[in-house]
Length: 251
Image 1 (cartoon, rainbow, N blue to C red):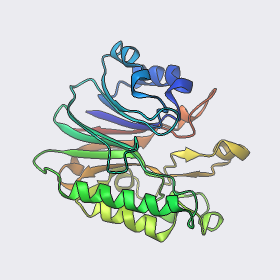
Image 2 (image 1 turned 135 degrees about the horizontal axis):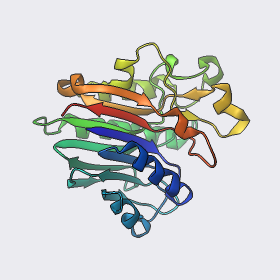
Image 3 (image 1 turned 45 degrees about the vertical axis):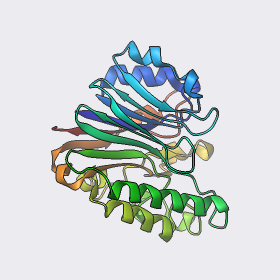
């Protein structure tokens, strides 16, 4: 089974690119973030033409998460207690998946930062209570770089969100529910950046961060054959500022 997670930064702006990528790479399941669409505006027919069923939680011009599947979709779960369009889960071909768009946090002294930490803790609590009878994959834009290896220059980001100790500790609590960061497990010494700012030529300078993460439950992490960032998808005309992260599993 092939699963991809991708913050597309507006399906309105990038639908053609997303459809082209799906057709070329043929994932069984695609987890999307920042669709920036109302639920009624989700392009269901365009995805159906490629064989995908979909579950989407929309919020107009902000947020928005989706699961696309060519292997069936059932038991859809929408949102956390905040009421925002930041989480959707489903069972696809026997694999339970969650597409997550974690709050940005904005600044360490901003109320949105405290909200981000609460959101991550609520996600951890939910996953700690999960049904463990089958495989689980949790992925998306976590807006946290787990370690200094995951940023281009730790000194340049000191005192900012995405790298603070409370945020990283929140990710560690998530992992402690029995999850493995499979990209880092397979690439222990490579940065594997997934996001580059649009400004200042950051992509070409290599000024990136690894904030799009894929977790698989520990009992099935050895089923992962490959996990990688498709950096080429960040190139070209009007790309998302995030690249897709692809995971191949033997399930």
